[in-house]
Length: 446
Image 1 (cartoon, one colour):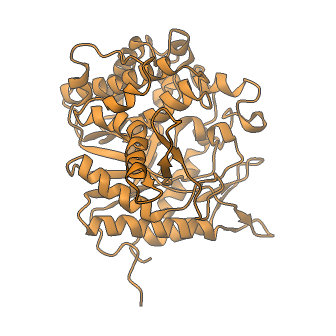
Image 2: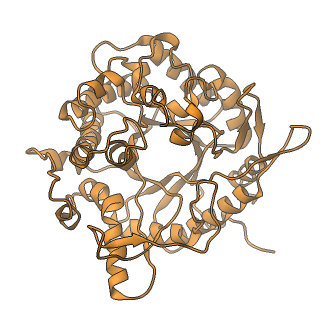
Image 3: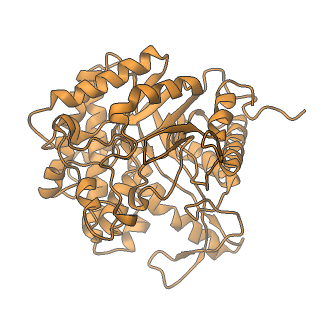
């Protein structure tokens, strides 16, 4: 008999599922919510596949009791969701919207009644549009406004919420949003993108400071989509290329959080960039956190390329891919967990996102959804996590991305990551086979 996938993980290991406000809530005009940069971005022709928007999505704003019931059936320990800043402070600063907190109070209370702990992300990309109009993340003022918003959230919810994440993937907010232009707000300006990096990290540091100064109970951390690509060959130039390929996704974000500053090698490749660091900023950003969140999906293979400013290129791979075109490399997950444990000196790591978009097949009668590819992906990655734990990596939890199919940013509704199938026509929820697999996993049977 083969051993259980979870054999050897600690008894207090956390099993959870994750979502984001704009991806699942819908109700963008309900109860005083203001517009976000994603509302604006979705209205721009050609930015989102088929012109899809999160206006309705899976309507969790109204259907959260049904979704919490599914979470309870799944056996989740925690549900990671994000607060919509435009729902709580529609203008981004100033007067809060009490009806926004009313919703999150209802959600938190319903979760607790179901025996599920809430894990709250303060920012998952839906910046209030008025703040973008005033400069967005390239403006220092946005970080200050975030600090005030964070403190408001701590005061309102910390009596029942003990697990907090400041930011989700500031790499995506800055690089995809301000450099590549494929995420909101859709800019393509490297100097502004790098200013955004610094102010996002400053916002994180200010929020941690507010949490500590307020004496709030519980834990606080940040979720980064760090990555350490592997060299395509054992040649020295490819090894160096792999190291350099990690500078932006890993060291530009993790370095400051760990008190090591920004990687000079990376910045030297772009002389047009100037990081807007002011006195005391780096100390704020490096304030100790209780855990580090890791969002991980795939691993690149890279080779040397003297034509690239940073000297590397991404290579083709042989592995099967997900619907996103991302190679499935569970060994890379193991490698990265080992590397991250080394870079963070062993502070607790929580996998705050891992999962895959796969082709989902509804049964003829519409009552079952078969997704063997997703089950295989999850099994292989959780085995990799288990092996990393056995080899000394201090990984304490795993949140699958995602609970339910939803608005997948620029891909609209064309990619499905959920354990629960959502019929976007009538909002019917159908647990997939992977839902049943994850239930067995969380119960310790698989």
